[in-house]
Amino acid sequence: MERRYSLCFYLAGAVAARAGDEMSGPSLMLAAFALAGSAVEASSLLAGITIAAAVGGPVIGALLDRAVRPGRLLAGALVLYAAGLGVILAGLDRLPVGVTILIAVVTGLLGPALSGGWTAQLPCVVPGDRLPRANTLDAMTFGMASLAGPALAGTVAETLGAPTAVVVAAVLIGSALPAAWMLPARPGRARGAPTTSVVSDLAAGLRVLATRPPLARATLTSVLSCAAQGMLTACIPLLGERVLGGADRGAVLLSCTAISALVANAVLARFPRSVAPDTVIWASALIQAAALALAIWGQPVVLIVAVLVAGIGEGPQLAALFAVRHREAPERLRGQIFTTGASLKITAFALGAAVAGPVATWSLPGALAFAASLAVLAALGFFAVPSASATPSGGRAAPG
Image (cartoon, rainbow, N blue to C red; front, side):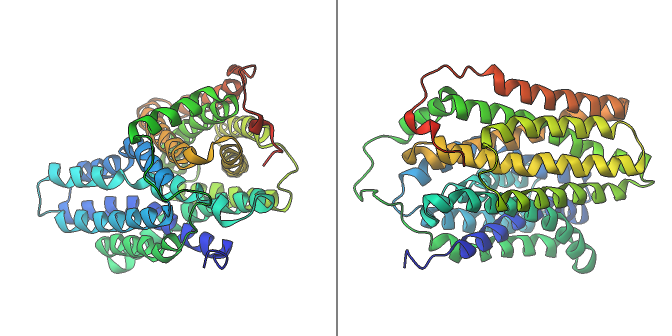
């Protein structure tokens, strides 16, 4: 059974789970506003289900690393996440607001399983010589999900109602269950009980993430870049209103970013070893900085070019980040490295968006300039991490 598990099956499950995840946030906001009539409750639900990932990621990753069949645990996380969406929907306008938000927070703890939890299992699916290309294809699923999820949420909400959009998101996540359940067992893992505690595994994972230079560099740069991306996202409605003639047209800008990220990764998949992933990480941050600076210009054509360039930076940076994690993370801690990294990025994105909102209201060019400066700082941060520290011999493997 292990040998029959294909990369296509893995990618199909990843796309379904991640598209459902991307769809769930907008759908919950629309449903909360439609059923409860409160914009505050709607935004609080989205914040609750997003920010909880910072806590859930490391724990989910540590549990995945300890499992002989991590796919079974991943499948359980998918079921619980989908069920959580259903409970939130059922509680809207029926349960107290605080209770509904608490349910969203508990559900959000499982969010990193849909992102980093999937990607950490990729080495069990494909052999090492095929991992660079598979890694880039896996990164493309995030672009597909970010493009399809919000669009599907809006379409379903408009045609069938916002509550139905939440149901569709849950069904999408649930449809990934077979692909997760059938993931191969981790090779060489003894079936006896782990000899270390979850707490010690968490400490070991954080220590590796902070002290192994290539991982620390990639994590710092990607987290700061994600904060800049959150700032750009918060500026999108105002950019649509002031440059394109309507706030709703800002969605076109997000689509342009997702499409260009997909195209860039498609090209990268053809030449997976052409550039070292470490180089791609810091260079992509500079590309994003240039795109944000270009967006300040405030002309329609220039703005569209700017968001296309932003996608060219975002897509390959994600693929390169995965490559560095696969290369540098110890096998027994790989899941935790991926889910902790996902948690940090989700939190950085949320904080970037939260900061940019008030700043953009005061000065849109100022917010974009702030975001561009943060992206430059992300690139500089890569080189600020000392590289002279002792790096395990495995850390100098071939790029990818």
